[in-house]
Image 1 (cartoon, rainbow, N blue to C red):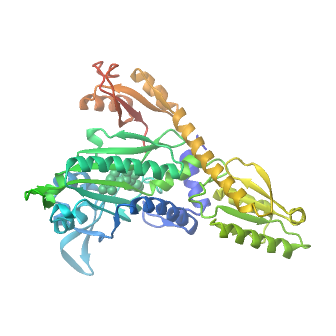
Image 2: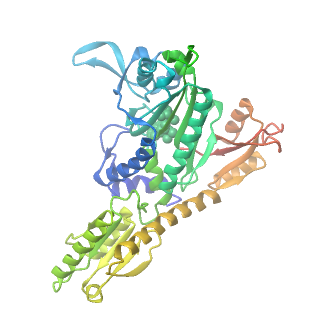
Length: 467
Ligand code: 5CA
């Protein structure tokens, strides 16, 4: 799987009924029912976090060219990626309309209307929508798509710079909590100047290391300063009666959350889903013989009811096929616990639980503690998947003292830390010489020499092969 991760990933999406890429537009795929549920449960987690202090909204998908073009740096960043609607029926439109590549230029003209005084601030809104980017790099399902179907974007506006800086910290904490819930490990860095979000002051990014050693950017948080406020005239009357520009931030995650979930936890047998987002947390597999069939099925239903009453998502696989095939199917689909129940188990009043993460079998009495025992196993499974994933990430971050070492370490599947003087030309030189991407700055330092210029280092930065 590690050697052929891209192939594994591509195949598992189809085999486990996540998405179907045979849709006849490149970079666009269909969410199938099983995948859709994983997506739904994942988005519910982030919605819950956002709902604490954000309002959910829904903006139109089309943006007039005049608005999109207003913020020069922003539009430059996206101009090669925008899809345009130019006709309504047979008629050319007076003004062409962009399919949002992201929604700053849709949302901020409205912020300009809504924000009047300091009482209206802060504003914190989010939406989960589809966005469109005509990506020119190699497209890959969920990882680099042209219709980003699951774009969670949050947009905030504040009266002071301090508040907007605090908001960046809040988003970082929120994303940590989100990814922790999914057991997805991450590296947080400040993107270099040349890779920040178009129009932002700076960008903080979350990256995960996929099994093949390539990193995937799974979330970004941007401090927009007052750039968009100036462009879209977003001002407020402050307590002192003065009219001031707001400070803004925005933060986004996408379908890549699901890609990383699949990538970091999966194994040769298929998906291993964290219980929180698995469509079924428990799959009951009846072992049926002619004799006693009805009794076994009745008991399975009873177990299902008991577990559902305890708040779990449970299904019974009563398809008329060999039990072995059922086990394989649910292994592939990554259901956290399979419960096996046959006539002999019924006689002994037990069921056999098989956990997907450890592949261990546990005998569980069918008594009043059944739900508690299962919940314990599910919690262990969450923790185990998370700690395995974090171990993998930690084992694959190495420190290099020179450019040769960088190459050696990246080629053997690692993300590499190095000392950097912080100068942009030197950063470009490092990228050109190695062929890898500088992810960003992890911390400031007052020791060490830059790996390329030999000057005093300012930062420990990260470099990697990236998706
Ligand atoms: N407006 C800001 C914050 S919402 C924004 O658009 N930021 S972004 O460009 O960095 O995108 C947010 C996140 O979407 C990225 O961190 C990345 O994880 C994801 N993303 C970007 N492009 C794609 C793509 N083509 N396919 C899948 N995910 C993508």
